[in-house]
Image 1: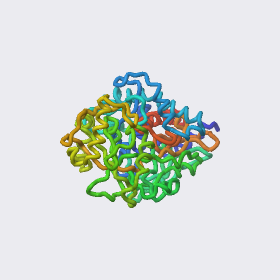
Image 2 (image 1 turned 60 degrees about the horizontal axis):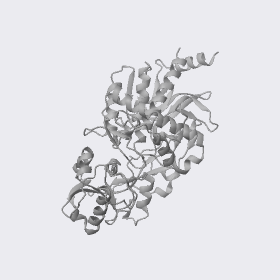
Image 3 (image 1 turned 90 degrees about the vertical axis):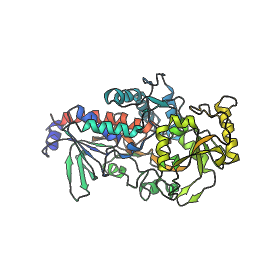
Image 4 (image 1 turned 120 degrees about the vertical axis):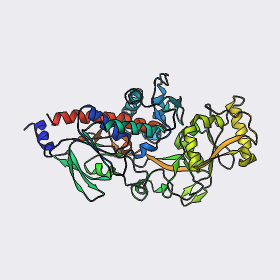
Length: 474
């Protein structure tokens, strides 16, 4: 019997063959969108009670270059990503370079697809930390880019009767037959359990919120750090059980700025202070003094914070102020208005911050106006407009601290989003995209590249799974 004939019989063991997508964040939605475009039935499984995952929270934007909003031919995107990856690039160099090349070279088409095909506004462009040029896109309106993209894709998918979304469903096992992935075993919160058969795309996210499990195993030094993620176990072990190679599992990104809520200082879960606040011109102070170029990579800014004494041990956190002027506020108004409403930032004057902070802001303003070179070598001040600060100058201030945010490690994939074994061979019948994977970012992820990674590799996974589905169901 031919392999194709064998697989056709195998997948028709269930009445209706379909592709299975695990995880309803942007990677899973991008994959499902490509699958239904090829008339492939999709069952999307989400373990939480509502779809969207952490992609819904993404607020700084999605990287892309060149685009209609950022026409610069930007070869630096690749080199910025390589540099950001750090020492990790010295191992499996050729493989990582292929993944990074796929990510950056596909960024323009990813933005075009979202804007032209899905009608999403991504007209504002900012420069985030570690980027040589502005290339991080977001909309001009009040809805954060993650939420606007996820909502648009969900709404478009709901128009297809071959698409089904199930929430509160946990995948408990990946099914194999003769070394091929043939489906999943699942359990629902209501007690229902069973199996689904078909090719599988895993887009189930990382383990940054798994403080008592995978995070404590791979990074015990981060015990006690707050996180921006909900406490859910990671799913990489499920893929490892079917032979997937794990890579970079100890590479966990600590984002330098998570808000310390004045009304809940000791909460272990923090709301992210979007990197766009610094990208649009904000500055950081410890004890009233600047201490870093705010546009360095997340890793570098975090390291500059953590050399200072801690403000508390439970959770482990620091007392850092983020300061915006009226120009930065206007540029990031949709974000700041939300933070003001949540009580995470306040509108005040420099007099309240004290004489040391006033001196620091005056020095920053001179550099921003071009009168002095910045002592921390910052060259982009974006929308900062307060060039002659006084004690009565209006500013917007919040307290922030480093937070566990993103896991760079996961299952190894290739440029086709195929899940790879330890010998480098792909596992038939399964693909992966998004934060569940490893190898794309190395030691540090550039801001704006998580949403991009989800779109690029999610779309690739959907295309490849659609080809496979057509083959096995001839």
